[in-house]
Length: 253
Ligand SMILES: [Zn+2]
Image 1 (spheres, rainbow, N blue to C red):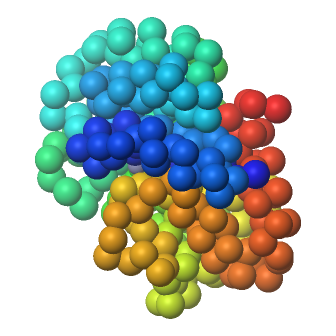
Image 2: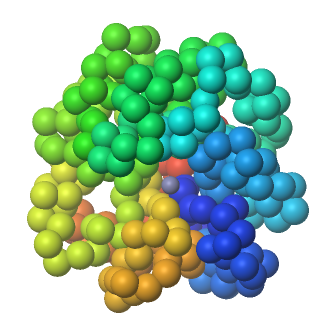
């Protein structure tokens, strides 16, 4: 059994035949997949898929690059969605200083209000972070430790060490399979085994041999194989460990 802990099958333009996408994943042993929202509309779509398909769970929240439209106190709908039994975390939230669709101030406001809400509802949190690890870690270090997962972790060893001190989980994606992934491989060897989960971030981040093509949840097995290789463990052991980690983080045990 494999779990794709982060995919965007809730983006209808990227997955026009989502039923087939889910069936393809299932047929290769991907029994669960988390559809991740980036704003209320895509979060609603993730919840709708979770309602329709037993294999799908939802993660809901405001992605940092979508926070241009975010106004203080506008988490009512997200709050309602978080009460749904198949909504397993808030996300993807965080900071992204790579793109400038929204200012750091707009991103910070949405981040801190969502962090407060997660405390109130006791919800695990899934972070998106790009070119902003020190800033995000500063925010988290100033707060009490919560269940945190850095999706598609791409920070340095130093960032990873700060995240480990917060007992964070680390999402590993397609880039672990790339030849030039030396730094990332060093990071995954540094992280405790019981804090690693696998994900596709599909349709983005395709693993080898699909680089340059569209990604899908079925390909999480290639991520698992590349992670197993980086860790020097066998593929079955890696799927068992990462599945158990995901179930623990998302409180499905
Ligand atoms: Zn994502």
